[in-house]
Image (cartoon, rainbow, N blue to C red; front, side):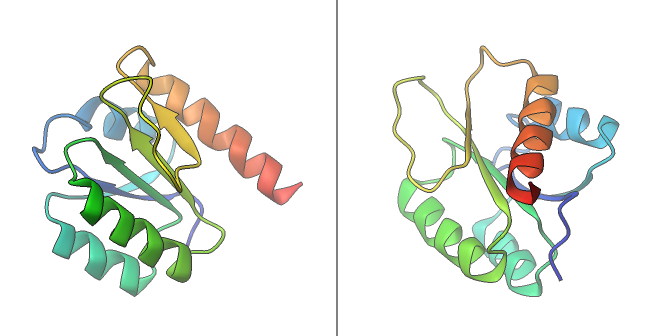
Length: 119
């Protein structure tokens, strides 16, 4: 069952999203960090996610497939995509972030989006 405070982080290089994962943990989120798309697929299919976080390191075709799977399994969940360039257009993402965003900004955005979905 999806839980709104559980984050599935697909972090292919195990480094890029570490500051964001740390900020999430400090913000009372449970973070499941995986490095391979197959692991992410397994976690999504198990429904252990309320938020899906990934980055530009995930090949776009893989991202689209996982985002679609996430929407089917976690229809009330949020997708967060960490972009390489601010002008990138990422479909299906609820929150888009770049290097200029502090990790704590992401936690604030998540809380705001969750309040909007509930209200």
